[in-house]
Length: 282
Length: 331
Image 1 (cartoon, chains in turn green, cyan):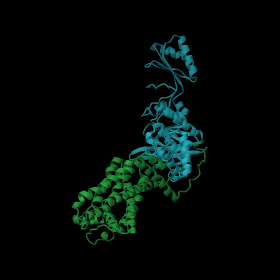
Image 2 (cartoon, chains in turn red, blue):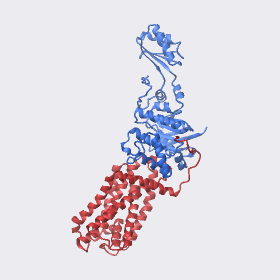
Image 3 (cartoon, rainbow over the protein chains, first blue to last red):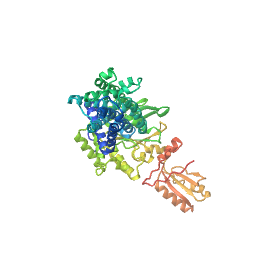
């Protein structure tokens, strides 16, 4: 059996890259990451435990002290779940930052780069795998929410739109994580840097408490924060309590704004990340 | 003759550090070029430029007839790369790794599986094929890594220190595989800091030091720069030195020289082992007591020393089956 001599290729140009390769290459790469999840199920387990713990903490411990204007304790749990879903989507970003940094500093990146694959597929594959994990976590969180008293009051179409919005936003925001990950020297630094911006962005929002309870100078930031828009839009679509501050633009069009933010993030950070990937270690 | 690799005037800086200072390289199709040099001499940088991983600051290079800067896809389609570290996914099995790389080479699902099985079999990894890489030994990882670089049936193979860190047996195994690939027509560019390895595998050798080519040629050409075989005779008594030299002068290809401090007589010879027998007989007949005698062939170590004035900085030791004599310090 010959290892190399069949099909000599010298002097013959490679088949022209096709757009379809970006898709098939991405699927191959994301399959790699999904296999990895099955090999290290602990990572998925802890990715699930954390938001579930937050649901229980806020539903039964902190929640009693927060007034969302209607429905008492049940009202707060209805308010809480869309917020927790938004929080989960945000915190998943830290995982991809570490994953990308770890990958980029390993020999396998050289292998990928020396293959005739689409370079961007290394990132699209990774972000797609992260999206699938996100969808699983969001599903399990929704079930947990139903168990503590959260309900979907509007129709199927609105609920489906809400979940689609979470998926699109989750996918877009992972590109920010990927972009950060490509600038980190090692996974230890990535572990800290990947989280440090997520905390203020996630918590300076309406996910746990209504905007009205916050100081006036902070309110505009909180109102326009993409995380707030995401949570508010989900509350509207699910028919959960939406204590509004007033009549500002982000409170009137949260769904449009959440999708808008998602596409904006994707349009900015996907090309930035692909560029960073191509130039890293050059 | 067709050149599989041609590089002209490659330069590369990393910050203020000059990694390559104008490198010219030519590798004929179907041959092995050994890039020899200590750590930091620029070997890996050359490989990374030729394998399209990084871009040179200036100069040009082509691999398989394609420009590495402007025809990256074409280059990647004809090359295979095995780096210093096993470039495989730790969490996947050997088979999953090879199938992944096959798919990324745009083989069909069926062909990727078939090619993976073929290569696993070829590299004695079939038994471990469905185990995670984490449980593989260093030698197995390297074999898998080499297998991965052969997925696309490359015409040009880059091997960046393929045996660094391997035990002597695994190293021999790698050498055998590389020799087979070459016999099938693959062009190989091999970097190594093991002089022995370049000697064994490479048709031609380029010696690098601090980003410069300091010598090139065949192993024999390089060795002839430091002279041919020599017999070294260490005598028991200093007073015997002159007489020894006089007695054996006729046997050598050039006059014998004397090193008084080490009580050594050096005789350049062409006859090799026959000459050593003649020397021993002659000295024995004349009752000269020999403390030590050896036939010494110049190694690439000698080449490196004579070219740079220093021995390879890493001075890795190789356990060789040939039991070559350890080198002696020279003044």
